[in-house]
Amino acid sequence: MSSEDRSLGFAPIFWGTLGLFMFVNGIQNNDIVSTSLGLSLIFTCILLAASRYVTNIKLSKILEYSSIIGSLGIILHGYIITENMFLLFIALTIIIVIICRIVYLKMIKKIGG
Image (cartoon, rainbow, N blue to C red; front, side, top):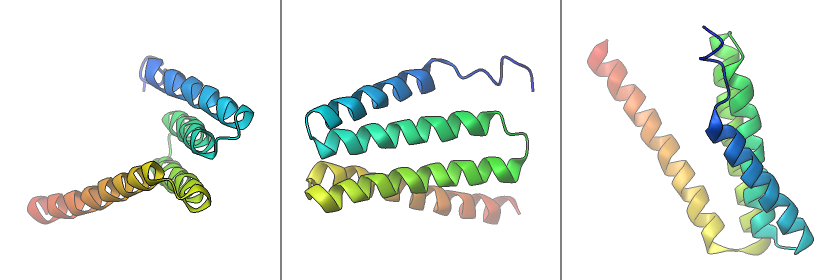
């Protein structure tokens, strides 16, 4: 893998910075929704950026799945505290995407193998 393939790029830096601003703004204004979303973005960007530098495929997958589970946990925690429907919508969207990916991978294995 060349050094160009391992560069972070614009997107993780942008979303991580946006998450940091949301997290700090949420703490200053005592807004748990902004704090939860910001912390979830920061957590996801850090782990996904770290997984780009890992050469071991299993460890990379572990980092990706821990990123998904950690972000989902942070968002669900924010929902439990605030009962905000927006956080529930985001959590349900993440769960639906995970289920669709699992079904897609099983279909690909069945068709290809």
